[in-house]
Image (tube, rainbow, N blue to C red; front, side, top):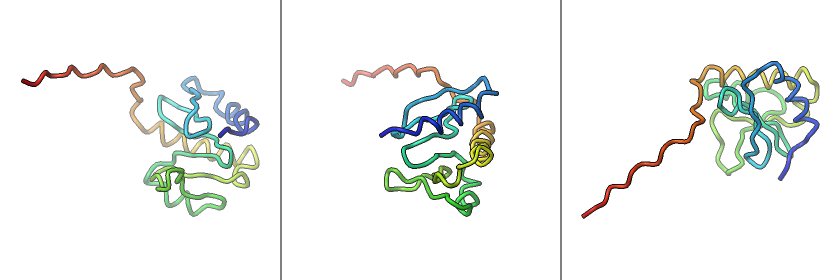
Length: 123
């Protein structure tokens, strides 16, 4: 799987005002992390947005939006927006803002690796 590089460039331009953005390849596409948390991303067929559980149903009511269910099970708080829903830069910017608003309300993610637990020898 891959992702649409033109859409990735559009998202990069939108997020260029921030200093806390990191790109990661995941979900078979490209994700944008803001403040250490996944905000939005691009697959071959759609734009992913993390809207959060409270905004999930409201987002699904909008045109060109469907549940994110790449595992066969919908992920609460995550949606796919089909290309017609982010055709313009203004529309894409609104979806990116939804993701940024949600993750900026979360505590900063700890990106440091956790130390492995010591194993206790059993007798």
